Length: 519
Image 1: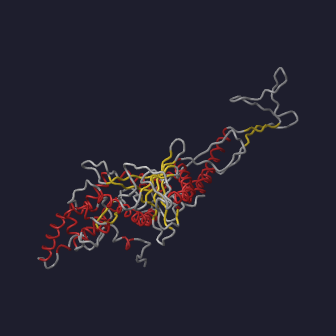
Image 2: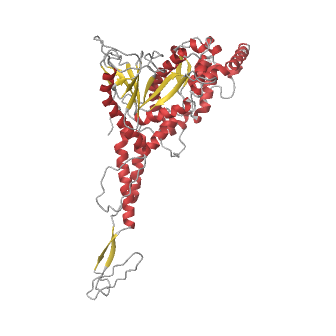
Image 3: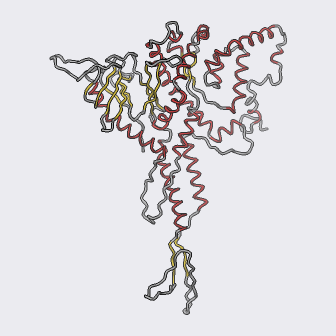
């Protein structure tokens, strides 16, 4: 049973070249525990699910079946929770007039698209959903060409990446971010970041970049030599590796149900073994005399041979029967279906079967588990929002440090507080409800900057706002002028004008379960 990923802390108030190796050495054991657990979970999701039992009967028949519900659960989470890339919109508290003219947030989204963040979001999501943690790395794009992003975005493997947090400060701020590679000989090469410095460390023994450091007695502390790329200073002034978590216990999406999935695999494997054993049954014969050959040895029947028996003279009736265990096969199959459904329910994966009986859309979502999936995804969105905004901090710092950004670019004036993460899930069955909600809000004076993100329908709301604003302003100007010149407000007196949402507004009265008149 897994217990989530461990957080790594240090009691050092500051990390410098004098103590970075000691801090790194102390942190490695906990990281290696996390790396081993992540490796197990990734292999488990890939199908490496050995049965937790030893077969003692008929060892020649040993079928091992992996139903691999872990993969099915993960694929659903990747599609439902991470199906749309996380984009950025303007924070509502800011004055949107200047922002919409220069479109800096749209430009920032374009930088993310140039870095293929759609595909990299799925790569990150696999680590987050399976391992419970993931990491992204932002740096200045030093090989910029026209049309490229001003920063680079990469996803790091949690088996070779970790962040050391402060146990000295109350806020547990990140103190050191570490990523490393391992060569064929098993030697590790670490890249470590603090806010002020970047260290290249070989084998957790010596620092390999920067200037020679000496102690108070004039003796050399570490073996340094200058490198062209990094030197000793972290140019961003911020830790460029961002940790993403799925939940605060840092457990994967199927991790708690591993014992149940193992038990299901054992039950299904034993069921198939029983079917095979019945096909290759051992026969029990009684009062049978087989013919003998010339040497006097009994000639036992072989495959496809006939066995003919006769009642003996003393009245005994010989028989040949297979040795088999009588199973309730229907009961076993129903148990498998129940256990599978129960595991998915605990992981908030909805059922794929279609209920009959004329249920309403809301009732259908509740019955099949889609409502629970949406609630769980909404909870996770709150954490993803925080992680994304930490990444945006690093991206804006990389843009400001990039020598390729034009001096008049609006990106240089964009602040972290101007942006907000937009996490959307495409739900086509709510399309009519969303569009009608948006139209009602805008026609009653709510700004499109608030309504478009509110309906959570478009993958890039900021681009939709920028492209649509001239047409929306013309429509609103025309609509309000017409309404002010019409005493009886004919604009509201159209078919179904009394219904704000034309999908769900009449379901309470028609439902036999929700607040209806049952008299």
